[in-house]
Length: 314
Image (cartoon, rainbow, N blue to C red; front, side, top):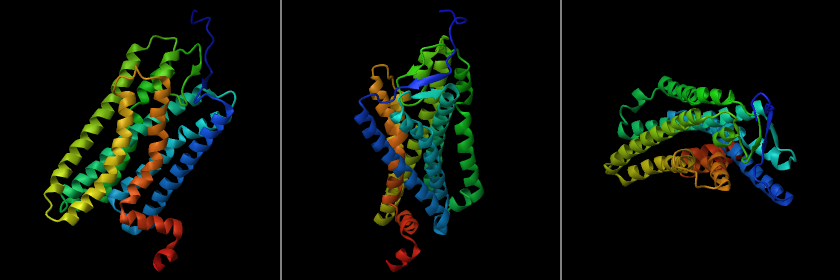
């Protein structure tokens, strides 16, 4: 069909997780529960850091921003996914699809930069404890937070803009629960090998460079911790960094499978499951991971949920 004779796509149909109505309701209930846990947990961390003056330190400022990021990260995909479970048409407008596409990848890239900033903060605190207050000042911390947001939202702006200018003349069915790069590129009427290669190259570059930086930082941290003569000091350092490393492992392990390693052999269902893990499940686990082994955070969260009077009676 000639492009001039082809009708322009004005909306996409997101198939999501097709199945009988009972399965749709079950998935809706499970994901709604995870969504509510994510919002509650991350909002509690933000409130705990905001209300407890003892947590007004760079480590917890990064954590509060990270929780704020996670709230927007799930909001970029989950509400539409929940609506589609109950919808018969499962329609998403063209502009809505590309808006979700942009925010999903921008927020994901911002998360990579925040994990780097948090790794750098722990590296300074453990390897250079005497110089830490002079280096990680409030102004420098705010600058790092600002740069994480700016670089995260600028990283994929140009390639996504080019993809949105491609011709989409049908079909318009996306076998996914969100607007991801490969399903969208597959629907384009225009040959897109260069744009596809540029997009995946940028994604791979961000993922590999940030993961190498984080691993390098924690290698130096581990070497410094093993030199600490006190076992209590080692335990405190491992407790602080262990939660961060677990979050890094969960997030990077899944996104590397999707965007770095060859995925042509994986089924569409496997792609959906992997995307569901890093976009929905991981943000729900992060508040638990960061708070379970952190006494200061547990105390602050108890004050958020139980009130000051309850804590004074303990």
